[in-house]
Amino acid sequence: MKRLAVYCGSASPADPRFAELAREVGDALARRGIGVVYGGGRLGMMGALAGGALAAGGEVIGVIPEKLVEAELANPDCTELRKVKGMHERKLAFTELSDGFLTLPGGVGTMDELWEAVSWAQLGYHAKPVGLLNAFGFFDHLLAFNRHMAETGFIRTAHRGIIMAEHDLGLLLTRMAAHEPVRAITAMGLDEI
Image (tube, rainbow, N blue to C red; front, side, top):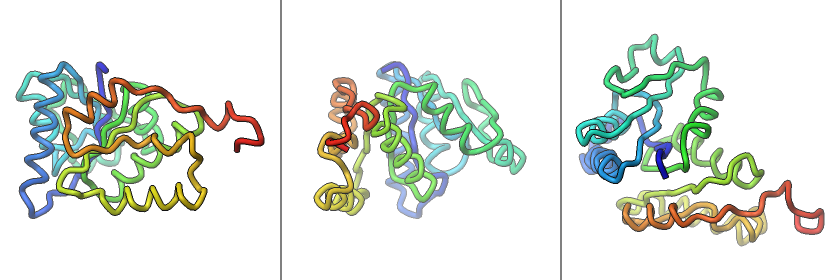
């Protein structure tokens, strides 16, 4: 994996562990020679992620909608800052520029990005790994809900393993590097759908 799209919050939670986690992930990716593609923001976990990667000499590509640039939320320190018209173009750029997706704790925008990566994998729009760093148990309830969707039949058996979740970044990256694409809905017969 040469680059990962990293999804995380633009907020700064009061708990300092979250910002430190983002810095550590940025640093660890840079030290492994993995570039970061992210939302291009300078605040919150996004800014900490970029700062960690840049301080370790890593590549950081920010992809940010024009409205957020106008609001002065863009990170001018990125290796490359791509301005796009809106969120749809932003998420498409994440997919085109990266070899996989890594989700850290975040809010609604982070969840939107995660679920789109999962949905696109199911549909065959990409065949890239989707990793979830479950630091501090932050995603325990989300993972339980994902299991619930699978158990009730809303996630096909072939797609139950799309989200690779681990508490340890090294283990997660190892799993992501060994990723084998799932069978997309578009490749299934009607009896499988």
